[in-house]
Image 1 (cartoon, rainbow, N blue to C red):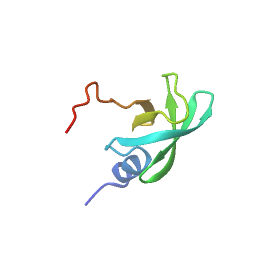
Image 2 (cartoon, rainbow, N blue to C red):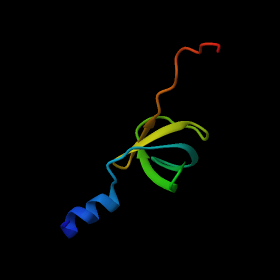
Image 3 (cartoon, rainbow, N blue to C red):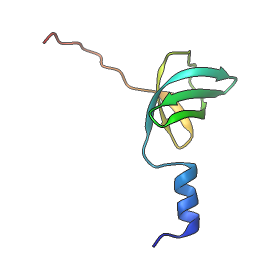
Length: 72
């Protein structure tokens, strides 16, 4: 059994981080396309359209990228 307040908090800000791409910018807000659909989040980083981001607790930060590429 879950409490209604915990369920509401889970729906507003899910615990699992989302990975997506920036598709729109509106000042400090960015629109991110994720596997669950479009999400609006705040960002402190300077982002551009097409950047990969990680959305966690309503904040968008740059997603880590590979530093080395190894041929297979």
